[in-house]
Image 1: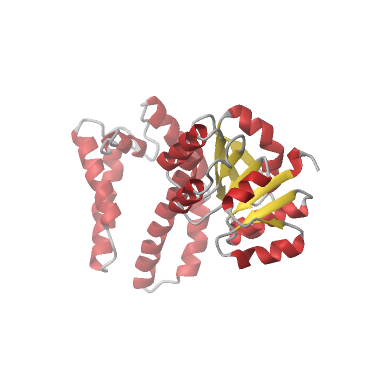
Image 2: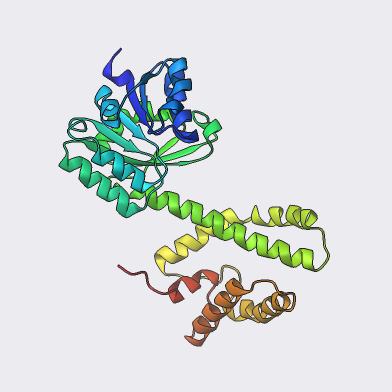
Length: 291
């Protein structure tokens, strides 16, 4: 067995177990460790080696994948490794902030290890299939050296040398979904309050949402270039809808917070003399992020 076919997995929740199982099934000499040792039993039965400690798992392979509950759990594992990390590659696919990912990268460098940060979009049953998306960031030469192994887990995208890039991508992708879906739930509440069938409405709304991908690209280009064409029509026309949207929701007791936010941004943008611009121009009215 060559070093390229050896891998360790730390963390055996649903996703970590799916990752370890994939490596075992693909013929990798796989070592696993979990704080609750009993979770390793099914993988041991499948052919994986079990380690007594996280440090032992890292020492067993040139590449270790960490898939834990959160960033705090990753910090605890790293602190337990002593000198075991030296000369190894640590790949963290645990959800964490970009700042945490960069701090993990610094920790690895200080302890003689290489670090890649990775994020997974998809459910455990889809590990190793085209129905999952993985992104990685960190040193390019490290990624290139282990790309073939990481591709065993599914389609991957490399986002550059900044260890925090994969976390930025992941959190932004998830945020888009949550922003859309909470708005959708509020809208279903409105439709239901008016006595209409929410399933029938959802079918029609899905067709409308299907037209959005080109709009997203158009809006992103406008933000990037600062050239705000009337993408959904001029703001001074769009703004005329807002009182109706807000009034309809509030008369039914449905949340109108987002609608009021949009109206405030539109009013401010129009007052600044930009009523001929489109919805994407509201980006210029958003409060500036804290550096």
